[in-house]
Length: 526
Image (tube, rainbow, N blue to C red; front, side):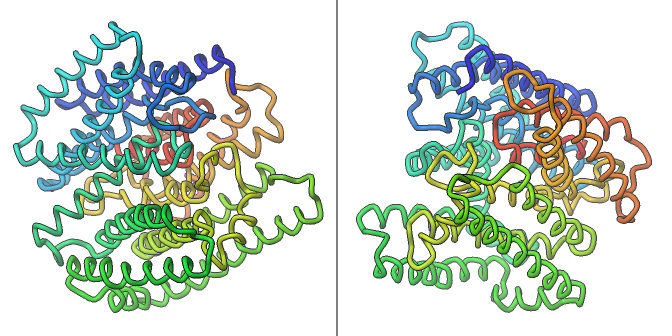
């Protein structure tokens, strides 16, 4: 554990970077939600210290990841800021529907963040009076703004997401202790709650066939994976999951629910059979076939690296885990996968990332439940690649890497793309820049040549500087090879965005693969 005074320095440094990001965004984009966002940031700064004390004393209701602070401030800002910058882009492009949708995203993010803060205040003894005053003022500002900005139906939608978040948090945090910090839970479970509410809303309103099928594929896949995990957790609570009977039951239930519930659900939404649509989508052009062949080869290379490292462990019993540099091989492979996808066929990359996420999560279920015949093998192979953040029953590092690379592609505002200019044309590359290039170079250079450490952390000044330089070089290469990216103006904003996100990587104890691409995405969208 990091000493308390070091933790405080680290939290303050992280908070300063987040405040700089928030103020930078609102210096360019200012609307009626801006005051609420600033108030929420100040309130989250106060409350996260209460969360940290609860985590250190073991007073939290659920078991959270112990190797990090609560991360409430950086997590609380992501969804509201994303909604604010999306609203400006949709307003500039004249898309009224998505402008209102962005307002709902902002209000929902504020409601979720405030709810998580109230939980900490409710179980902190004695009651922190000053923090309660700040929270009360923030609550008044948020409620007043929502009252004057949202229609009744939109307020109901915010409350629906909040209700789903409450129940989903109780289920997931109970089933998966020590897998999340409060901030990571806010981002992951808040996003899943919003997705589930959107899927239910679109299904009940019978708007199927009007949207892009790839968007419905993402929504249904995410909901299906969560529901499958909850169902199997409940069933294997009463059954021994390590037997062949349980394995047969697992595979049959997955097939029945997939083909009997989720595929028909997707078919209802896209008005076509999903399998026929997927095959037609994949063979639409030769470029897609070449990309699929190339990605298949890279998957085989990744599997080969896993097997090679495990064969080395068998000959060296003193090697419990691989080095940081070895772990970053997979970041490099992710860059090699995503760069041609973003450049040549973003729709294919979108679908491939969804399919890959489904495979990763299902394989993790197999490993977690010890499903024969692969469960124990996966457990043995992946143990070598664990780090301190995999302190819970699930191994999430590779899933977070996939999410970090994919979220900028999934969140790209395609229907508002006409308003994108300058650094915002780099939006699909945010995961590549922040995780694939920046985080990788920072880790490799910091561990090999870093000497000046940031206060309270093992990360180094040299690693952060090299990360900034590497991302600038990567942007220059993108400008050369991708004609769709055009940065006529905004070079100062581009440099400032990369610098702030790199500093956040140096100070945060949250999952950097998750929050760094989101913050860079928000900064570039401004």
